[in-house]
Image (cartoon, rainbow, N blue to C red; front, side):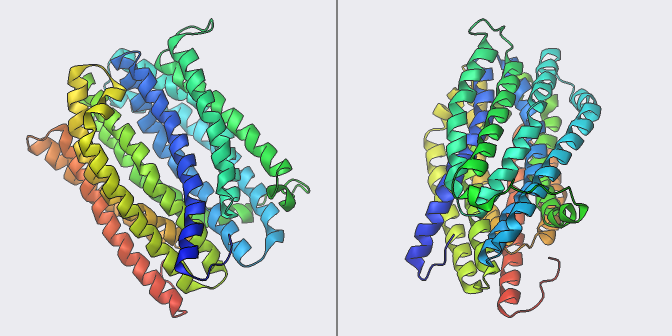
Length: 455
């Protein structure tokens, strides 16, 4: 990161930061995409099992990543304030916390996984695949969250290309391992959808090892000497990170977990409907990486400018990101409308599944338009370290507004499964409007040097 003096420089720097984040996020999501698509080529049961497993995994992943993401604005503001000497301890404590959270998730997962799957009344083969996809994926949780901690450090410095390179290296490895374990190649048994979990776990370990090497040996990260002097875990540092990270993580959990609840509610439909819903949701998740990347770039840019007390520049970056996100969403919506059939055929060859997926994709067009506004605003608010009200807004928008609306449309109209998507769209739209109002309030008070209530 560096100071800019005009709009052209800001646009250039923002693109330099955002594009590698976008490539990284899309590539990370492509691992889940490959898991789902390649499993679907095995059978509809494998597709449904992996898709359901993914829908349960993603909320947990995003929640913990939200906690880890707190490191990005912390580092960005430290660099903006020229406090480089504080960086190593922040990173080490973040690593300790990520490992502790990983063990906590593994413990909770061992207790609640079976009961949750039993609630869904799945067909026996789908239940088996979903369970052991998650079990095998769980063996890679520790290295995954370790990588995300290191990545947040890299991104906080504005060095977003580093994590992009790591993921681009790992993506073809993941696809190749999927091919081996799903379809039984090179002497391995054909695990079907469960093989996708094995492949992704191995990939997480590879990604973690590469990232550790980079911050220890590669410039500019090695100049921070993160591991030169080891410090003991300190609860005070954990608490300071959690004060920022927990609201971020819970807000992201409320947003993503609603999709898991919808999946549970849709388990009453047949396997083809579940498979089509999850295929469309999987692709929508891939599209979400666009506004999410804009939001993550805004966290870095806004955090840097806020740390340096350049509040007008922080405002300029914010609106630049929001406008860019909306333009991207409109373009993507047009592409989806024109090529819905091609997207549906990526996931399955069954004509009924393809037809249903195309209908779900139409709803995804409006879904991603709402996300294009909300996600960048969330990122900007994280740059201000304003996270507590965002948590409340997420809870109200998605769970108190979106989910009940979806339930009503699904059960009391002839829309059936599509009704849940209407609820999601309504929830996301309500959240985007509320976030915009919060952003305007924060910007006004920061500019006038007034306290921001609820931060």
